Amino acid sequence: MSFAVLAGGLTVSSQAASSGTLAIAIKDDQGMPVRDAVVMVYPATGIAGGSYKFDGNGVMQQRNIQFDPGTLIVAKGTNVSFPNRDRVRHNVYSFSEAGKFEMKLYGKDESRSQRFSIVGTVALGCNIHDEMKGYIKVVDTPYAAKTNHNGLLQIGGLPGGFARVKVWHPNNRVRGGETEFSLPISGSGLTKKTATLKLRK
Image (cartoon, rainbow, N blue to C red; front, side, top):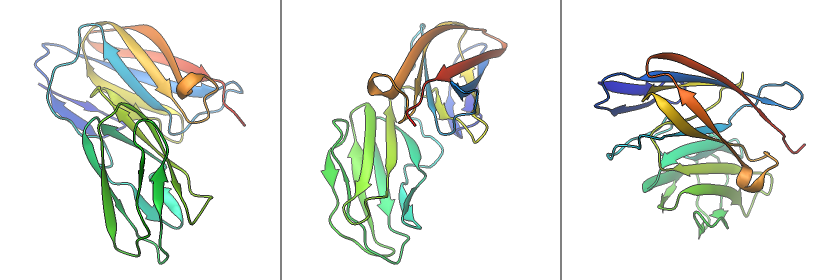
């Protein structure tokens, strides 16, 4: 049987006889939807080994003086490429513990790459354009996706039983930007959940 993260484009193989789907809505404390919140699910039954990919295919490009996408989810050990689609040069860097690096100046249609082997959040910047900000969320679970512009996502293929759920957003006002809670997941059908984050303005 195969499962897919419906909002994140992830597909891997699973031997589970049955599985459920988590439908989650992320809102701020004003009731507004939160876009690009990353949800990670860790079933109590554990996670089978194997490789997996997420929507975005490990590419963080620079386009229109922005990182695109603004938030990229990758599996631990992924080699991420950083193609420059702008007419100007960029100098990409991160001081984050999950991935410290610096890519010296490179120009249009050139690319650099960096491997991310530590689970966590990598905050990106450009030494030439201070307004550029981006994030790479390095995860160790195939059950991960980010919310759409309506603050919604669905994660399929989940085994039934309790699971730890982590919700990350760069403006979440908690340590590491991650809110964590436990949730019973139905082994078949849909489990719905709404989570509220207190965001920095």
